[in-house]
Amino acid sequence: MIAFIKKYIHAIPILVYLVIYMTCFILVERIPRESYTILHTAFDDRIPFCEYFIIPYLLWFVYVTLFFVIFIFWDKDSYCKMFTTMTIGMTIFIIVSAIWPNAHDLREQAALALEAKDTVFTRLVVRLYGTDTATNLLPSIHVYNSLAVQFAIFHSPVMKKHRWVAPTTGLLCVLIILSTMFVKQHSVIDVVAAIALYALMYFLVYRRGLNFFELARKHKEKRRAAASRTE
Image: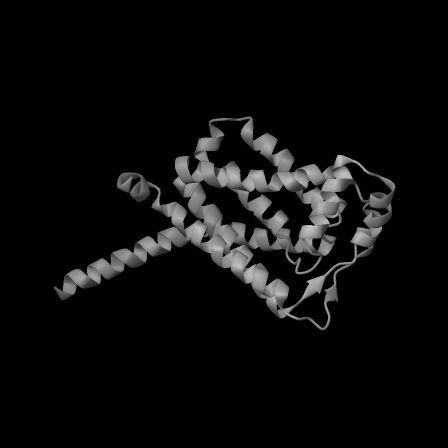
């Protein structure tokens, strides 16, 4: 058991971060607000509500979790890069939500369709609306984390051994991004902001080498070197 923990100790930071993130998210959602900035564009009005997109929207949870587990056990380097990308983006999301409360009014477009139909898909949408508020949306974490996972897959030497994985998950990634708008969970503004933020993080992580685990390792080596000199 000790050997197992030591081998996969790099999984602990994401578990700790998720606890911190969810705590902050709950607190931000409970902050009393006098008003929200409504995010709405003309493009949002042109995108029809489509309840079938609830399937890729919900598959996001499986998609992100599955590849976190795969990378933790079989591709540590990809995991470390994905961890760095996601934690920065999710932290920025919490900060934006805290200082600039935002919301959308797009669910009104879906109301008529939900009232007219009673299918497993519309029921899932209604349940989603009941558990996830239309507040604090920018940038879309659904979009941002989907891109973080997908580009980790593209760069993963383990995934490159299975050529069918990247195209398959790439299609799912696109459907997830579209689903955020077709089920009226996000405005186009949220999606564009998430893509722009990820583009910046891609440059920092995959081009400039930003990696929290590597930074921690170098810091530990410096401390050891300093300690050895003092001895």
